[in-house]
Image (cartoon, rainbow, N blue to C red; front, side, top):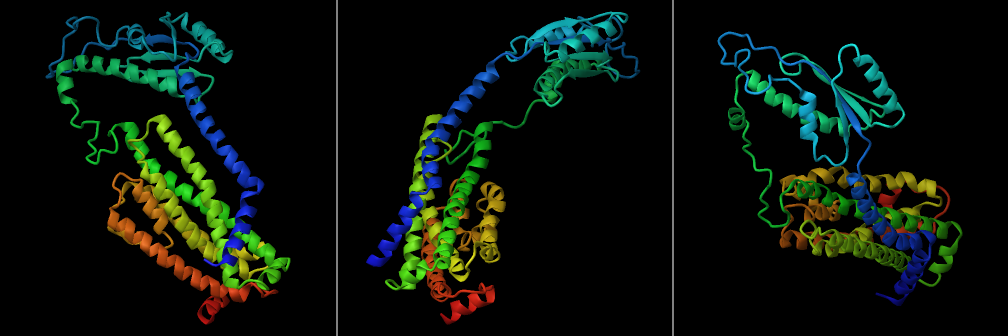
Length: 439
C-alpha cells in the first residue's frame, strides 16, 4: 500500500473518529449495555412484586343432573363429593394459592338481591384504583352457557385475566368430565402428551428448551442488523465527505498531489478502519453481555470474530460503490436516485433474515449466499443459526468476497477518475456504465 493511500486513510480515519456521533457511539455503548442489564434486573424485580388485589363474585349455578339416556353418567345424587359446578369460586381460591403477583382479596357469593349493590361497590373500588379488577362467574359453566366476565379499568392489561381464566378452565374441565361420566384417570390417559417439549440438539449448542428455541430464532437477526447498522451509519459519511470535497473544490487540490485511485483507496481504507474501531468496541461489549448473562450455549465465541471479518469485507465492498456515486454528483440529493440500487441490495438480506435463520441449509439460500451483494449478510445469518455452514463454505465465501472487492474497486476507480472532476449535471446510470466500460 502506497504512502499516499495511507496518508489519505489516516486523514479519513481521524475525520470519522473525531466526530461527535462517533464519540457518542463509543461512549454510549457501555452505558447502553449497563442500562440493558439493569433494566432486565428491574423488570424481573417488578414482575415478582405483588400487584393490586382482585376479587371474585360467584353467581354461578351448579350443573343439573345429566338426563340423556344411553350414556354412562352419574345419576342425580350419586356424584362423588359436590355436584359438578358447585362452589367454583371457593375452589378457584384454593387453586390460586401461591400466585405471588396478584392477591385474591375475597370470594363473594351474594344473593340475587345483594348482587347489584356489590357489583357497583366493586366497580367503584376498581375505578378508584383500589382493585386491579374483579371476576364475575355467571350461569352454569359446566353444562350450560355460563361464562366468566372480567371487570377492570385497564382493558389492555390482560395478564391477570388470562391467568384467572386458565385456572378456572382447569376446574371446569374436571367438572365436565365428571358430569359426562368420564373419570379423571381416563381423561388423563386420553390427553397424555406425545411430544417431549425439550428438544434434543445434537450439535450441543442449545439446551432445547423454549427460551433457547426463541433465542435461536432471533440471534441470527441481531448479527444481520449489526452489519446493516455498520454499513449504513459509516458509509453515509463517506458519501457526504466525497460530495463536500468535490463541491468546495478541495478534491482538485488533493488530486494535484495524488492520483484519483489513491484518493479513493485511501478514503475506503480510512472508512473501514473507523468502522472496525467502533464495531470492535460494540463487539467486546456484546461478548461481555453474553458472558454476563450466561448465553455461551447460544452464541459461540468465534461468532464475534466472524462478525468483524464479514463486517470488514462488507464495508470494503459497498464503500467502493458509494465512493463512485459520490464522485458522480455534486449535491447529496442528487445521489439519492443512484443510491437506490445499493439500498435495495442492503434491504433484501434484511427481508430474508428470519427465514434464512430458520432454514439455513435450503439450496436456494446457499445459492444466494454466493451472490456478492448478499454474501456477508447471509453468511452471518447462517453462521449464527442452529445449522451453521462448514469451513469449506466459509472459505469459499471469503475468497469470493476478496475477488468481488477487487473487481468492485477496479470498476469504481474508473467511475471515480472521470466523475470526481466533472461538475454540472449529475451522471445517470447509463453514463456510469459507460465510464466503467471505457475507463
